[in-house]
Length: 148
Image 1: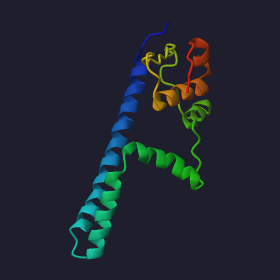
Image 2: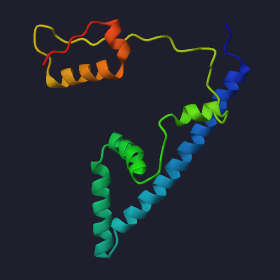
Image 3: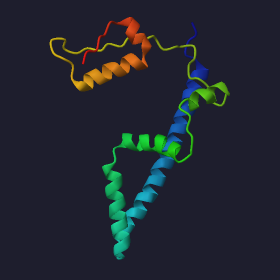
Image 4: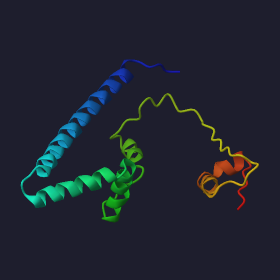
């Protein structure tokens, strides 16, 4: 069994440095763009004020998770393909290195629990059906029957 040593600690420090750089860039760009829209919001030109107010209203109304979905699926609908296993491909091509490969994750158990004295709701039933179809191991590991 290998231990956590100096190379792993240095790798984590480099990763923390990149995290700080990316956070700083996002903070600066977000501040600049937000500042532009704040100035537009206070503008004497009515069209700029309305545009900024509309943009702010739309952006604040969208949940962050929806922005992630729109970024991934919307870009692919416009022709920009983002492969789902981009990181795995980069690891294979040695552009990314796996972090602590000598420490694999333990196998996890999934439990789906709901009251048996009632019929499961349509949401629970849909989730159980999803689990059964998406993870074939669930069918073998536990005897879940989904009744309509």
